[in-house]
Image (cartoon, rainbow, N blue to C red; front, side):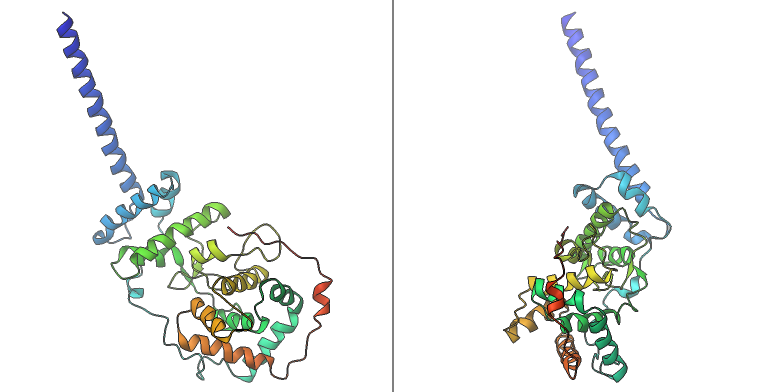
Length: 296
């Protein structure tokens, strides 16, 4: 009688274990199917499944991932694979960097934002002309920030095998982290094909590491001029900017955009802004209260 009871317990134990295994299999299938999207080609579905598992391991829940990956706006951009932002002729006529109009507009930005730029220069030690130069080259003073969904850009680079796949997976995780903290829809953030967004054209990991709340409102918004300029300065400082070391300056600018012609263009435009510019009153900055920066 005792032996029969033990056998029944063993059978029940095996059944329970089988039930757990079955439940786990069903859950895995459900998670994959719920995050699948018809607009993603079948050839990339397996890689998307692996990406979802990776994001789940990073702490994102099914409730967070399912609405995003199953959204009809999700798609891939095969045309961006293999593209490069290097080699642009920043000093050429088409880019228009050194035209009279471009230089005058830069000087107006300096004048209109002299207090803000003075505060940032004092806090981070980065020349205001350099910040305005980067602002001009990156987005033409906010006019050209990119018009593609950066979630899709990063998803494409993550799913389509290329040298940036691992990097894109990390950036995608950072994008979702930013959206979790700011309560934003990741499928509403637009930027460049390379995943950069906002006035300073930061990729998500740069936002997380170097984003600064420049106006002290408790939030980092890279489409806000105060936050954007302060974040640029913080980035350059983090990469070794030194006012008295020309080599360190070039190194910091190169870290912002790994292109020698970019570095040259930033420095040349900054010098053009200094030429014949009316000096601003530095004393006006000292009378302003200092604002604290918050980094994510």
